[in-house]
Image 1 (cartoon, rainbow, N blue to C red):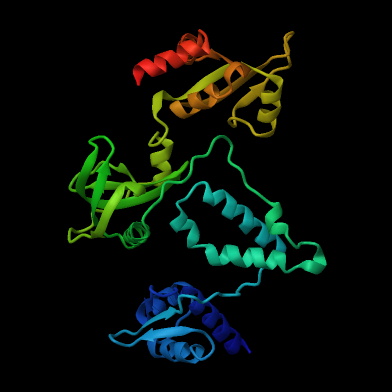
Image 2 (image 1 turned 90 degrees about the vertical axis):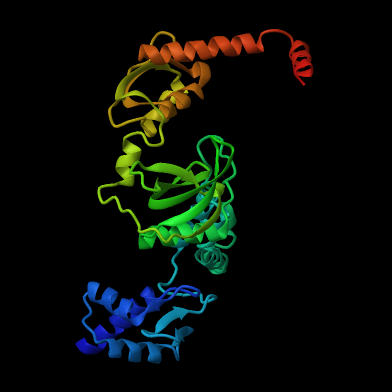
Amino acid sequence: MGTQRDTLFRYLSMLQLIPRAPHYRATTTLKDMLEERGFKVELRTIQRDLEKMSSHFPLHCNQSERPFRWSFDAGFKSGLPAMDTATALTLVLAEEYLKSLLPSIAVDRLGQQFDSARKFLDGLQQNGYADRARRVRAIPDGKALLPAQVDAGVWQGISDALLHHQAVDVHYLSRQKGEIQQYTLHPQGLVARHSVSYLLATVNDYDDVRQFALHRIRQLSPSRMPFRQQPEFSVESYITHGGFDYPLGARQVELVARISPDLAWRLRETPLSEQQQLSAPGDDGRITLTATVPNDQQTLWWLTGFGPRVEVVQPTEWRRILAEQARQMLKQYTGPADDTQGRLDRTA
C-alpha cells in the first residue's frame, strides 16, 4: 500500500510540474525537480510514467531531440484540486482587482482559473450561489487608471529572462529622451505599481538597477551577452529604500495632523502605520493624528487628496509645501469662470 501511495503522489507531483504548450520540461529536468520534492526515481521510470499518463491526460512528447520534452495540450483545463466556494469567490475578487493593476496579457494567463471559478459559482443553483460571480467586485482606493498595454511577446520574454537569468536586447522608448534607445538589460525583478508594470534591471555593463516600463519596450530578443547577476539584490529592499516612493529626505518622520472625524474613523479601522495614535476630539470636533510615516512624495500626495479634511502641523516642511499648493490653487481658481475660458482661448 505504501508503494502504491508513493507512486500516486509521484504522479500528481509530476503532473503539477509539466507546463502547457508551447512550454515544455525535459525528463532530466523533471527528475531533478522530483528529487527536490523527495522522490528518488530513475530517468527511465519517469519516461515510463509519462507514457502511461499520456493515455489518460493530454500530454505531448517531443521526441525530436534527447532528452524527450513533455507538455500539456495548450487548451487543457485541469480540475485538480477541486474548486470550493471560498476559493471561487476569492478568485473572482482577485480577477477584479488584478484587472486594474496588471496588463491584460498578464491577467489573461489566469483566464482558465477565473473562468472555472465563475462557472463553479454559476452552477450552484441549489445552494443559492447562482449569479454570485456578478455580485462581487473589488474597487481600488482612489482613482485607478487603465493598465498600460504590454505586448504579449514582451511579457513572455521578460518572464522567461527573469526566471532563467538571461540578458535581453531591447528597443526601449525613453521617456526622458523621447526616442527609441537600444539596451542590453539584465533582469533583476518585476514590480506592478498602480497601472504600470516595471522591469528592474541593470543596463549594459553598469551595476545600478534602473526601472523600465514594460509597455515602452518595442522589441525584445534574447541577448548573446552573459547575464550579470546581482546576488545581493532584493526587490523588497529596493522598494523599502525608496526605489518607487520619490523620497523627500529622511526615511521616517513623525506626522502630526488635525483630521476630520470621518477620516479618524477610517484610520482606526485601517491605520496609516503601526506607530499611530488618535486623540480624543477637540472642541471643534477635530482629532489629532500622530504617526510615524515614510518621508516620501507618496505619503504627501495621499494627504493632499483629503483637502481641508487634513491640516498638517508637522513636519513643518510638509506644512509649507501644502500651504504653497493651496495658495497656487486659490490663485488659479480665483475669478469668474468666463475669465478662465478667456485665458484658455488666448492660450490656444
